[in-house]
Length: 81
Image (tube, rainbow, N blue to C red):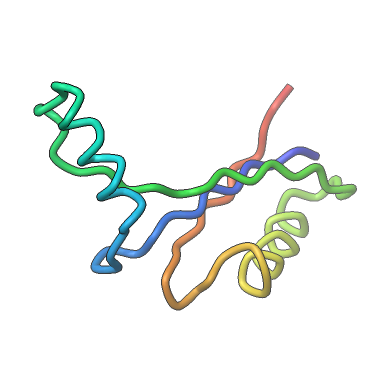
């Protein structure tokens, strides 16, 4: 089973990387860009056929290693096909 995990900073957490990208875009005549937040996408293939068990396992992985639960949110989505 394949899953995508999107990790983003929680609201209120400063994003210096996003600010740097926004400033660079604005300097490239993209003044329409008002905010940029940078996150990460993690693709995982897990040997589990039960989606509920897989989601629980992936959530534990996120809580322990893949995301910082104090500063980041994550969203798990299973890929079909």
